[in-house]
Structure formats: C-alpha cells, structure tokens
Image (tube, rainbow over all chains, first blue to last red; front, side, top):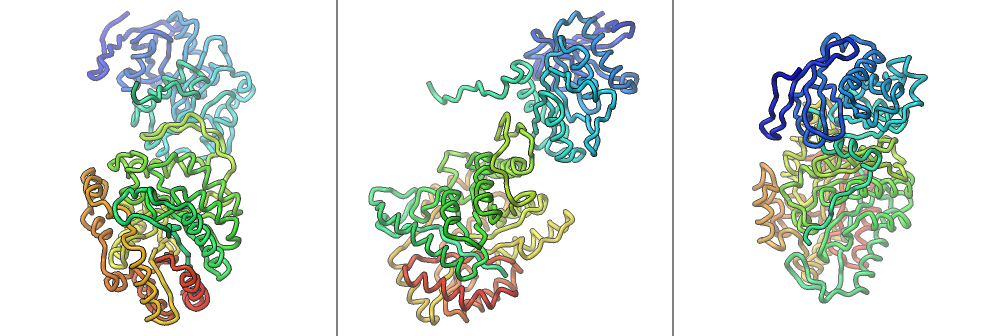
Length: 217
Length: 365
C-alpha cells in the first residue's frame, strides 16, 4: 500500500513508500525508477538511491534492528522473499558491511535470480582471512553472479589484505577503491553511482570503456 | 650525508636564448646526442667515484633538459650505473598517467634490483602547459595520483579506481616493485601545503629551485607537522638540491663558471616566460604562500646565489664549508649536487674533485 513520498531536490526522483508481505513478514520499502530491478538494502533518503533511480528500478529496503539481528542466511531468505513478493524474476542487490554475507548466500541460493551484487565496504572475512560466516564456506564456489566490492581509500577499518581477499576468494568479484572516501556510498555518492551503475548495466563488460573520447566532431 | 649527482641533461648545442617553450628551429641532433652521452658518462663516473645516488628529472619543451621522460633516462642510466641508487626527482605525476608511472617505476626497480628512488613532483609551473592540464588542479591531481601509484605497487589483486581525476576499471601491474612495500618516495616540499601533505602521508621531502633560508623554514614546518602526525623525520627524509662546480682553486672554479655562464645564458623554465607564469599564478597554482613561492624562482646574482646556498662554487675546501652551512641549517641526509653548467672536461674534473676530495669529508655527517 503506497503512502508517503520522498523527493530529492536535485534529481527530482520521487520514492513511493509501501509495505510488502515477504513470506509472512511485513517489509517496508520505498520504490522509484524503472528498468532493471535493484534491491538496495539502504535508506531511500540516501543520495545514492536517488542517483541510481534515474537508471534503474530501485527498491530500498531499510534494515531495522530485527533484520540486523538475523543470521546472514536468514537475511538472504528475507531478501529473496521480498523479491518474490515484488514479482522480480531477475534482480541485482546492493548491500553494505556484514550484509555482504547475505548477498553471497543469496548468490549461492538463487543463482538463477541474482544477476549482480554490489557490496559496499564488505565484511566477509576476518583479519585472519577466515569467512565471517562458516555456513557460507561450502557455498562460496557455487556463486555465479558477478559482484563488485567497493572500499573507500580512507577506510581505516580495512587493511590491504582484507580488501584483497574479496577479489581473491569470492568467485567473479571485482575490487574497486573509491578515492578519498571513508564510506563510498555516502561520502562520494556520485562517484559510487557512476561505477556501480555501469557495473549493474553491463556486468563484466563494465571493464571496457564505452566513453566517447572525441573532443569535437 | 649522502651525495647524489643530478643532471637535467642540458642540451649544449645551438639554440635560441630566452622564452618558453623554446623553438626547435636551430636544434642539432648531433649536439643533443653528445649532450645525452656526456650526461651518461658523468653518471657513470659518479658511480665509480662513490656517489650514493645519481638523479634525473622531468622537464619539457626547452634545452634546459633533454629528459622529458626521466623513466627513459633512468633506463639508460641503469645500464651504466651499477652501484649507486637511481633517483627520479622526479616524475611530474599530475600531468601523467599514474598507472603508467607506477609501471615504469616498477620496471626500473626490477631492472636495478631495487635501486630506484621514487620522486613524485608537481613540477615547475610551466609543465602544466605541456600536456594542457589546468594548474588549478595540480595539487588535487598530485595527491590522488600518489595514492593511486602506491596502490598499484602494494595491491596484489586486480583492482579498480574511482577517483576525482583518475578512473580505472582494472589494474594489476607487472613487473612488481622489488623494494617492499615500495621504493622510498620523495616529493617537493617548498610550499606549506606540500609539507603538510608529506607529514600527513609520511612521505619524504626534496627541496629544489630554492635557497637555504626558505628550505629551512619549509623543513622546520614539515618536521613540526610530522610530529603532529606522530612521527619524526630522519635526515634521509630531506634532500636539498644545489648547483655545484668544483675547481682546483676558488679562482679557477669561479672563472670556469663565469665563462660557461656567458656561453649558455638564460637557460630557464617558468621564469623565461613571465606572462605565462603570471597566468599560471592567476589559477591559484602556488597556494597560500604564493609570494614566497614565486620569489624563489626569481633570478639572482651569482654572489647572492652562493650566499643563500643556491650554488656551491670553489675549491674542495670551500665547497665543504658551503656544505657545512647547508647541513647545519637543514640537517638534510641527502644533497643533490647539480651539474651547474656543462663544461666538458672541466665538468668531469669537477665531479672527480667532488668524489675524491668532498664526498669522503661529508660521508659521516
């Protein structure tokens, strides 16, 4: 059921809020845009959501305390249920921090549905290089969706080794550093939106530039 | 104190005095090749005589320097200098492709088995005209380029970079650097902003085209800021570049220098085109200490240059005294001794005198 709308003054994107029944659990979401569906586990007030809604059908799912307390596998089921409730046959997902574990579970559980995953400052491995969720270990190799792990260069929480592990151990994972950012989604949303927009649209093809280099005709 | 021999590989053939950029209409290939070969010979000699480093730099569009790409020069040097470190002081990173710079430094580090010193500079103001880069973006480009180059050297997995000025989707350089985590980095530190950035990022400083009083002020600021960020720079974290010509006697050195000055006047860069320099200044290039930064580029008389430690000129005894002043004021660990003028055999003799009669007396400072 739709109610309040959130409008960004700059992008003029209008998010419509509603409540969806996700396999028996009511989930509040905010939607805007059209095209490829992207579930953002983030607030619809984030500038990144508004920037992406100009290119994609964005469904923001703001995680509350109840969701945060779930195990990664349960979080993945909740997101899958939400996608089913929205009637999404294929979709992309954007998460941050420890919710990257849920994205990886989802990639292993419903590989036919999850097209691509974006992970902001993912916390998938501990400092010793061990998965933060042992139940994911056996499933990791089965992930076919391409993922993009973004880290801010000012993020003191991640060491070089931590960030590299994502590229090394997660199948089809691209590693991206966002310069001069602590939290790329919030401190440099335009930069983040450009690269993840390209990745979501083109998958692996985002490695190849399609920019027109000509200055004048 | 360590000693480096620095040469811009000046062109000593027919040219047109003044201005920047300098016309190539009277350029002589033979003279350029001879200039290049004599610079290489000087570096080879310095290596034999015990200089700790040899150093090269990047300048464009003028006979002041025949090394617009110091990486190529360093590659050539690496084939004749077998012991000394090879310092690139440096690459002008805001006007270059940082990934390419990282690759080239890594290649040189591999070729020299870890003897590369990585200078990364903003360059002289005129360099921004070279590749049509807005001088107002100099500092922003510099800071991001350095971060990206370090990432290229230290990240072993392929990575992308989403910056303000640079964007790469996937990078994984080969060959890798020999020195771990990476070669020692120096940057120019004459402005307060540079000293603060270096202190914040634990980067070492080099002073060039300046003088001892100005360098002392900048070095003190750098050390003070480093303490704020929890570290204490060592003497080796400061390089001072100074012109030099050593003769058998003071009179002979002065005579040689004055004769060479008459033969090759006005070999300058930014200040050879004052109108251009003013336009660059108008972009805010110099930062908050603009007057002092512009003043240090101004031409001075020879005696003034000697007095403020901009040139070392005289017999070995005199030059050692002049070096004492620099060491006392700056506590620098490396002095980058610049071939002041190319004088053929006189320059070779000057390098010999440095190696035989000056370096042994400063090595333990």
